[in-house]
Image (cartoon, rainbow, N blue to C red; front, side, top):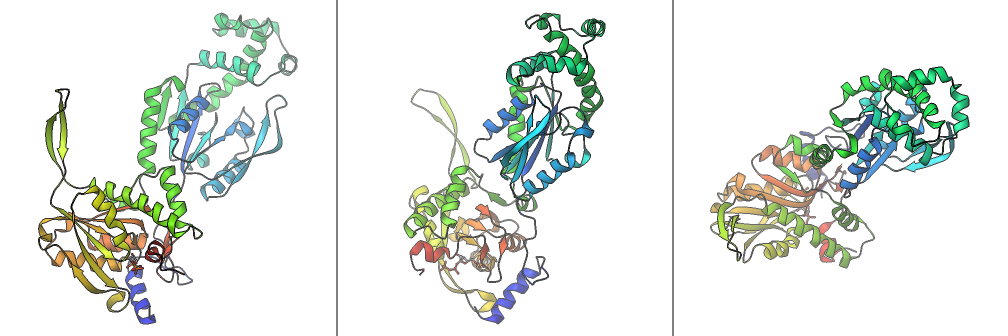
Amino acid sequence: MDSETLSTLNNNIKNHLPVQSNGLISAPDPPKQPFVIGVAGGTASGKTTVCNMIISQLHDQRVVLVNQVWNCVRFPDAFNTELLLSCMEKLKNGRAVNIPNYDFQTHKRIGPGWKVNPSDIIILEGILVLHDPRVRDLMNMKIFVDTDSDLRLARRIQRDTVERGRNIQNVLDQFQLNIDKYFQLWNSTNLSNMVFRYSSFQPVIYNLQYARSVKPSFEEFILPSKKYADVIIPRGGDNDVAIDLIIQHIRAKLGQHHLCKIYPNVSVIHSTFQMRGMHTLVRDVKTTKHDFVFYADRLIRLVVEHGLGHLPFTEKQITTPTGSIYPGVVFCKRLCGVSVIRSGESMENALRACCKGIKIGKILIHGEGNNGRQLIYEKLPADISSRHVLLLDPVLASGNSAVKAINLLLSKGVVESNIIFLNLIAAPQGIHVVCKKFPKLKIVTSEIDVTLDEDLSVIPGMGEFGDRYFGTNN
Ligand SMILES: O=P(O)(O)OC[C@H]1O[C@H](OP(=O)(O)OP(=O)(O)O)[C@H](O)[C@@H]1O
């Protein structure tokens, strides 16, 4: 590309986008941030159960659980909030952190801790995670698990003796057992049914610990933080309906790229580990041509199927072999494909596989000349103006090719809202340019990348798609 063309292209983009001090065009929005969920609640309220349910139901997402137990478990001033904040800051910026281990018997941090990798979702669990406003500000969703205090005490006794191996003598020493106080406390709490399952000292110990430390700290510090929660879950992990609603909300939020919120006509396919795996392969410079074509084809098929989902339909009731009525729909029949030569041709097979006998037109746009892109050749169905058009090009970079192709379609009488532009990856710059110029058109893509480089290549991108797909690279 000559320098004059490059400068024209850059100017087009700069009209829409911020430019860094070093002259590089930066993406208009920050890179994808993890979705941070805070889960608070009294001791043994079922926070961990709630977190585990969320993690297991979001099995197709990368989730990390940061458990605030690694700090002290009693009062907020004993929490090392600064350390927590710095860990969260690193995770939010895509860096791994080391979480210290906590010894429940000695009440001290031990060992080197464990490594937590950055993820799409970070769950921050702890009795006081909603207490500090700086920690709250990190969260996209704040949950308070609200379980009856008697039930929590029963669970805590079970947990501390069976799971955490607490030593009775240590607890006795710690709390200077006072039998009068014990009876006073014993009478003030409603534990008699439950504690007789334990040895004679245990009810005393736990009742005292609960009454002297855990219960007051709950009432003083934890309970007031409930008001900051977005969602309060009564009965903790037993509340399947609440957990389901939370999962639905998280899924909806994760599926929305920030550009999808700015431009409602941009649709990014819901990401799964399968999708990520395919993107990992097609983006990897070491991937062979054979594998590149195989995984690009799989991704293309998904994009095409997703794109077809945006076509209009008519309702149709049919009768099944069981004699039952099925309230179905009928596909839109007036459609055609248009591929942008050459890379767009890689998407034709998938379109044909989904739409029997579909007509496919072609457009060739050359990479140099007028505004960086020049129309060289076109062959389109004669009746294209009455059809919905699936425009095929796996890469949307600066958007200049797309603008040329779409202008041609409009000049042939195609209705703007009848165009669905299908691609595998899109740069934010290209999305801005196309959406601003054609606000009624729909863009369907599988991933939105970070930015463009000086050569207008998508970053991180996947290189020259056409050369890798057709085997014409070196
Ligand atoms: O949004 P833009 O900045 O216009 O860039 C996107 C265009 O670049 C790629 O084609 P390329 O020019 O590499 O040709 P090819 O398909 O023949 O490899 C891609 O397939 C698009 O057509």
